[in-house]
Structures are given as C-alpha cells and as structure tokens.
Length: 139
Image (tube, rainbow, N blue to C red; front, side, top):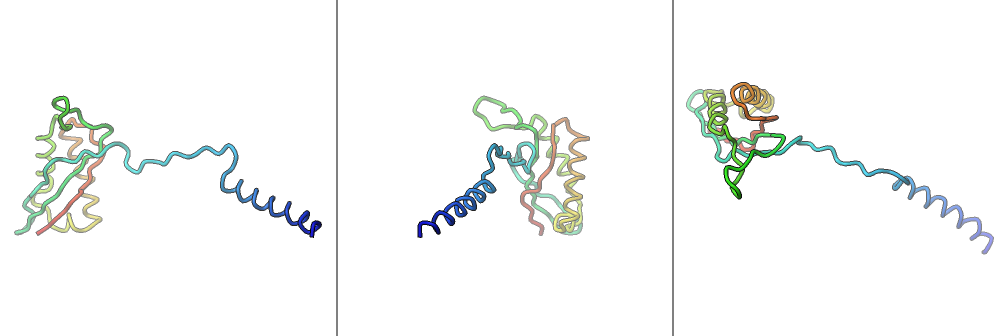
C-alpha cells in the first residue's frame, strides 16, 4: 500500500499543480477589460417627438458619447451642454420627415446614427464622439 501511495501521490500532485499553473500562471498580469463605450454617455434630458413621412410620428431618446461629461451650470447642478439648443435643433432637423423605416430597420437606423453624428460635428462645437438612439417609438 505504501509503495502504491509513493507512486500515485507524486503523479496526483504533478497533475494538480499543472492544472493550477494553467489556470493561474505565475507572474500573469490581470488584463483590464477593454471598454465597449469609449467615454461617457450623456443622455439628452427630454426625448424628441418628430413628424415622420406620411402621417407618422416618432418619439426618440438620444444619448451622446463624449470623452467627458459637460460641465454643470452651477455647483451641484446636473451637467448641461453649453450648446444644448443647437444640438436639439440639429437632431430635430435630421429626424423630421424621415420615412418610418429609417427608425425601425436596424441597418437604416445605423446609417441615420452616422448621419446624426456627422451633422452634430459639422453644425455644433460640442465634442461629441458618438450618438445613441436609446428609446424609439413610431406611430
């Protein structure tokens, strides 16, 4: 029995040690997860209700991806975009009159988001990195 234990025990320890090293290699650095959203998301306060093509209308909530949150107007107040009115006007202008499919169809919606980003960068001075349509309803 002692001879079998002397043969089996080192094998078990080697296998267990190898498994441990495979799962927890020495000196391995823990990797930081790569952020999926580069920056912060700033949700525009109220949604947009716009007339679409035909007799349809849409209600859309918009979030802006920015490197940092905009400053607060006063200490303790919520962050606010300095050009909030201009940003809202650009978004309303771009959404008004769209075919309803531009909001419903995923591919067309992604094109719309890219178009919104280009328009915001061209017509405002806000440091916007991305646009997210967070809630969408079409009637």
